[in-house]
Image 1 (tube, rainbow, N blue to C red):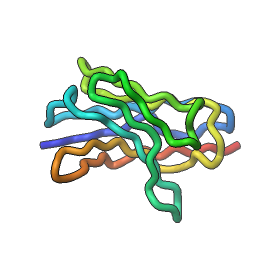
Image 2 (cartoon, helix red, strand yellow; image 1 turned 135 degrees about the horizontal axis):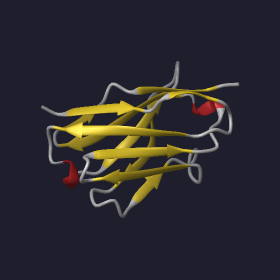
Image 3 (cartoon, rainbow, N blue to C red; image 1 turned 90 degrees about the horizontal axis):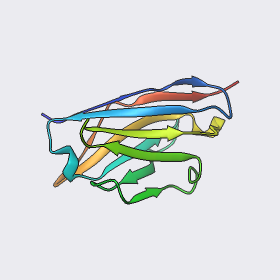
Length: 116
């Protein structure tokens, strides 16, 4: 049974940092690319970052490029999202995800709130 469990969210002031984690189980983690998405209140879910299975290739949304960094530890079946220089517009529920045909799998998300 596939499980993706996000953690590390919370309340942070503008300019602060958070590190999100996503613990994966129930599938061969090291063979799949992993992604982070986010959904702000009243908005559609949007792509944030993606990392290839071996970790060497990463992609970012323009809105987070230079501030966020995705990484993974295949020995721990965990993917991370380091978020720096946070802005109020980064406030959202953050989800980790992967695609195994024929469907996407999602965690339940972790809330990130950026506010003074």
